[in-house]
Image 1 (tube, one colour):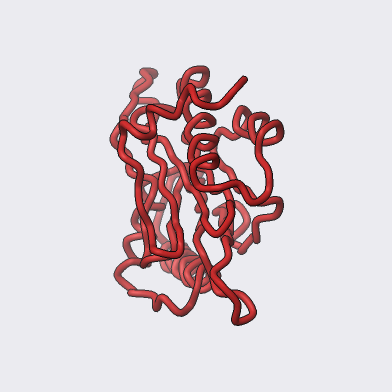
Image 2 (cartoon, helix red, strand yellow):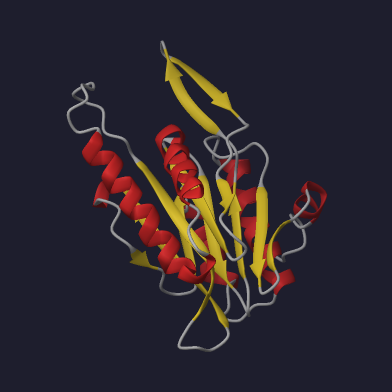
Length: 217
């Protein structure tokens, strides 16, 4: 399992993800802490994945190879990813699989988009395999998936509209860190990045870890 977060701020959007993957092999739990779940696409969009990382990563690779035009905006990137996912599902429908297997994974596509010929504004979409990758526009300024129980509480208490870059990065880092301390399905390296008008930038590990204790309880 995992935790992915996209939070809208003032002229920016902050994204976060852990790097832990878990599986059961012969009754033994296996953890991997090197799963990449955060993928920049162009200058102003990022795709986050959760769930079954194998097929999800493959679909992101196909999206990157398609070289979606920057001018399509975040909605265009999300729409293109949904189209790729549905086509792959159609192509695989006759491939034999275990009768109990159903790929369960999801995406958040987040970034900045020019709206009504104005400036760049934060916007994000969720796409989930269980709903046929229907685009779901984020409401309320934040989108989460995976294990969001603790972040939902933290954001309900501390998230505000138009937070600045520094405040929002600290909030996302704190939500990831607090979840990883309690839920063993979330862990490994915690990654936080920001999409601003100048493009995407990922925070250093030291910067992320230095924010864990900055937010008041």
